[in-house]
Image 1 (cartoon, rainbow, N blue to C red):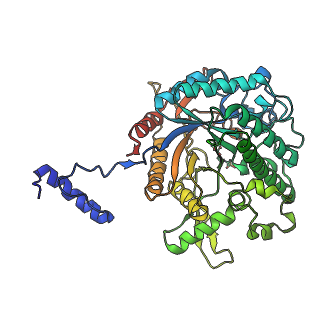
Image 2: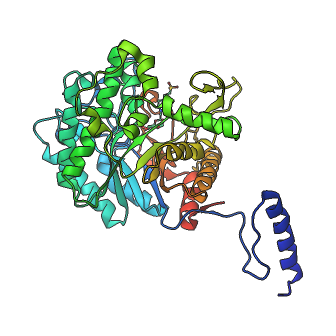
Image 3: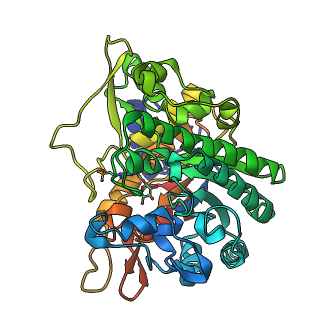
Amino acid sequence: MSILTRRQFGKTAALSTAAALAGVALPKFGLAQPHVSTLSFPQGFLWGCATAAYQVEGGAAEDGRGPSLWDVFSHTPGKTHLGETGDVADDSYHRYKEDIQLLKALGVSTYRMSLSWSRIFPSGSGAVNPKGVDYYNRVVDELLANNITPYVTLFHWDTPAGLAGGWQNRDTSKAFGDYAAYIGKHFSDRVKHFMTTNEFTCFTDLGYRIAQFAPGLKLANGAANQVRHHGILAHGLGLQALRANSPSDVQVGLAENAVVYVPVIETDAHIKAAQKATRVGNAPFLTALMEGKYIDEYLQQEGADAPKVEAGDFKAIGGALDFVGLNIYTPTYVRADDSKLGFAVEPAPTSYPHMASPWLTLGPECIYWGVRNVVDLWSPKGIFITENGCSSDDVPNDAGQIEDVDRVMYLRNHLTHLHRAASEGYPVKGYFLWSLLDNFEWADGYSKRFGIHYVDFKTQKRTPKLSAQWYREVIAKNAVE
Ligand code: GBH
């Protein structure tokens, strides 16, 4: 038996009390001091940051880029905060090298970016714009030269305005398939990870049902359901086209903000309810992809307004994914009840805390349940957190520093719960923090900052916030403390 020094004994005793309380197996006496407070992520876990083309690039009319529905919408009076647009945004179209150095300083191994479809096909289909292709070739090559792996989203809401009828028109889904084939052909020698679409609900429902996002329409239920179908069909056709035009080492997934149902209490009954809610609550989107059909609950609920599906649609939509990317920000609490569906969503009390954006209610356990519900239901091959982060009313202090302790709090807590998922064996492969930079926050214009780098939009100067320093530590240690 090894003899303990007084100091070792003290530590071990404190540990054994904590471990006994937590029901954790104790290390044997005499081993190296364990660091029980360090939550290490699996080896090879990928750390990254995310952005999207229209939110950061600017250069809106440069080198032949065609307009997108977001250019049109943001230039329409009354649609965005103070009429702000993505015309200049972070000017990453010219400053991408500087931005890649920010990534390098953080130590990330990956960068999730999106392509502006209308930079590559100015009208959405037809003639290609070589200068747009060149821009993305330069960005991809610069990332690779800096040892940063690009994760590329083909569509983050900036639908080419030249596509007649937008997502009301089934031809837009086909045009997306053609665009994806082109991207596969010209980028898959260097880009090995693609996401087809970002967040179905945001470019379908928010744009076509409630008019909050581009193109700002309020269609009737049946027509809006058809728009949803065209959205997931685009994903399916894009998936097929990427596979058909890329070598076999290329991985294809998507980035989806599935509603995350969190059991009100961790009992078997509420956990089951959260699982049922995940399947039914995401029926038009993620459930349809994972099960290759619209489930009966959805079809019954929509009745005559259910989407019109053509032969072969679900063969594409239900195509196997290499990974599911989840954009996770907020929880939806759910409990078991004896209704037909077996669950009921709990409305949040008015006192419920949120971050700077009112919709961004706090509940860090959502990142654990988001992963767990999806894996328990459908066992995808792998999961990425393709977005997680928060807004804060960042203001530089007298020293010019941005001490965003609230963002650090948000991130630390979410990563702690993500660690729980990884340590329980859920196949979480990586995490992309939203966002690298403050940027054009859609209808909120520049009024909401999500970056871990502050951007002075007058000078385009980037300053790392406290959260950037904190994230660098997480990455260096592969752990959250
Ligand atoms: C993501 O969407 C997007 O992928 C990304 O582009 C965006 O910048 C980021 O999150 C931060 O918002 O105004 O109350 O009606 C997250 C899902 C959907 C959340 C739209 C905000 C508007 C809510 N978003 N929603 S509200």
